[in-house]
Amino acid sequence: MEILIFGNPILREKAKPVENIDGELKETIDKMAEIMYKAKGIGLAANQVGILKRFFIMDVSQREGKNKLEVYINPEIVFTEGETIYEEGCLSIPGYFAPVKRYAKIYIKAYDIDGKPIERELDEISAIVFQHEYDHLDGILFIDRLSPIRKQLFKKWWKKHYKK
Image 1: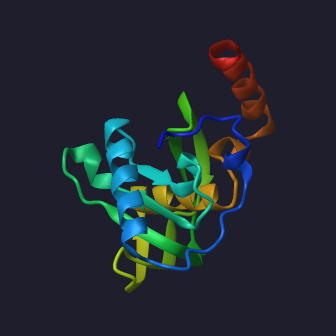
Image 2 (image 1 turned 90 degrees about the horizontal axis):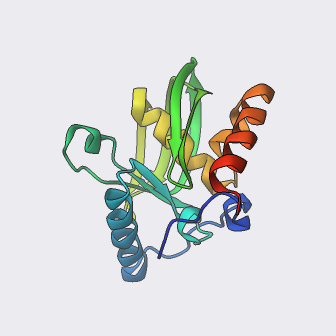
């Protein structure tokens, strides 16, 4: 299992709902967590490792040297409020960062690793990371949310750094 890089068509596909929360899914999540922590990321969607299922992991506490892995299976954003701008990056677009406008506060529903329903309000970095990973499940990358000028700058940057 490895992180797919921008240009891989799987990153642009919409994921399908998870139907069974079982041992196989838990093993996959453990592998994803290992990969995410090794890459020093704070979120990783199933699409990013080639799995077209609606789940992702995130751990915003890692930035403070702690580990508190959160698992969101079949997530939904139910309600949004306000706006914020945050300098985002992505493990599938290594080395590139840009300001992205997101909702400041979100109310979400999902299932955890044990299949128990989750309902909570997220704000600050948790809301931003959730929205970023949620976008992945719909085949949307953070660069899709950039202004036209920033998208052009990204294309030039990508060609310079990653074109073979």
